[in-house]
Length: 199
Image (cartoon, rainbow, N blue to C red; front, side, top):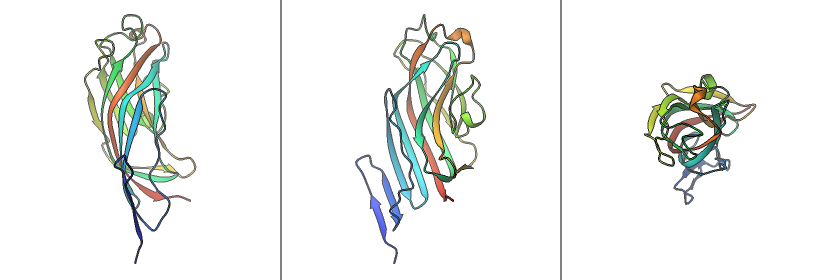
């Protein structure tokens, strides 16, 4: 008979594995500002990862206006993303009049690559598609949360280099950012995925 192991750490995560000491769930890096609480539910190769972002900080650099923050590391191997949902809200923490202006339109997405342009496209938003949001109207007061989801399941090849998740934001209009700004992102990201193996 198979020997099952069930692990339930204080985070509420659950791992059920059939005699395999290797936990297929990934890991969450600690952000420089804020925190990410991770809950993993794993049954064999199937995992559901819930990331709760608490004021995860980003610097908005005047002149580029795009930024990315790593929020999760998948294990090495082929990964099938069955689905993903997110509810996220932005909060400006620097002076509105002289850094990021009040109530400007930004874009937010989650992808397997960090932001590299003001238009979040391709791998910069291949997990949670680019969604428009309105930045803070008042310093240190979050704007309205936005919601988005992955439209269809997809496979990702992380057999050579393990795939990561990046929280990406951008402001397309340079005049929206008068000087380097700071912002935080809070909310919940849920990714349901399957580990397909490695070679």
